[in-house]
Length: 464
Image (tube, rainbow, N blue to C red; front, side):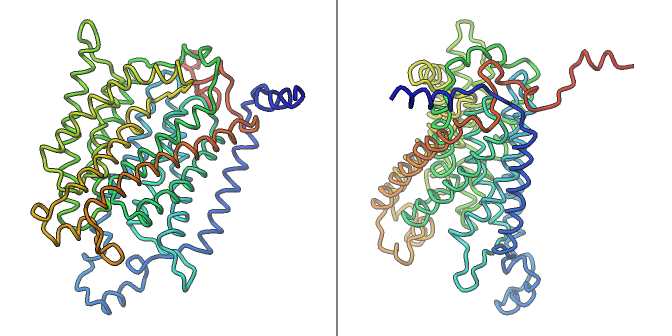
């Protein structure tokens, strides 16, 4: 028994080697070549992006190219795309010596993840059984970005503590798990979750937290000097916050139904976000003896309203209901940064660098249950009969589903997302504990110099 313990100790407590000159290029080249081969076998243009569009338009009595879904969805796609690459990237630049990693590794995760997502989501949602091909269009691109968001959220909990090779592994499994739980929640349970409170935020948050818990570093205090911000790093992170805050109405409404659903989702998200700003500022000021604001709260908790509104965004929650959601989640998220994060680290040994529990996991879970309550309370006098059918897709095998039953399934979907995040994250975390990934030592975290060429100011001064 003692020999087994010694063996496991040697495996998991092996001295760290951060040289990734072989492993990172190998993973990038092999996986990209695999993507090329898989795309060649499976991926094709859909009828709206194929050169046969002219014939398709004539056969379906479509009078104008403007009716191509590209012109309807592309503005939303642009906004979501900016959120994924600029918003999430700059939000992670708050650490004083990890801005390259925050933006650069975010870029890497999203670039690989969107390719794998097009395949994984295609196999579940767009595979033609007759041809064996997946057809993609502009909505596929939006959904692929959504899929990447789950892994980017998980990265927030791991920021500064893992190698780029580990992040690619996190993304490979994260996108795979996302596609499966999304299929279960949206297709099998027939839940509505346009803005992804459940499938994106609750899953991504708990996925990252579970990985971080398994990868607990008992001596992380040795890097405490770098686990903080400086003035300019917080300004850069605030840029990410503002991009996310401005485009979140597009995020929650991007794939909703044409017409009233998309219109309503944008309004509800807009109002919830505005409300969460004021309560975040209020609680942040109250928490300090002299009423000073904490930039961490302003960068993160101000976005909680958008997260919590994701599921119910297209429902008739009413404008004042949206303000209530933002009001409550702003308070809850800020309290999370004040009390929950320190509690998790001290008592549960969970090191959450970006506080994804307070911005994504907890508001995502609340958003899922808010959606369940609003769905169960839906009434024909508010929606109209046709409005109920349209909003909740009560058609086909779900034509006879009641709103109460729908509410129950919405709650079940939230639980599925959390379970996938926790169990999947624990398994992935265990895989990442093997000493082959080039992750930094406990005293070498939160530092760009480990994986990036960093030109220091004093070096620049010495140049002729």
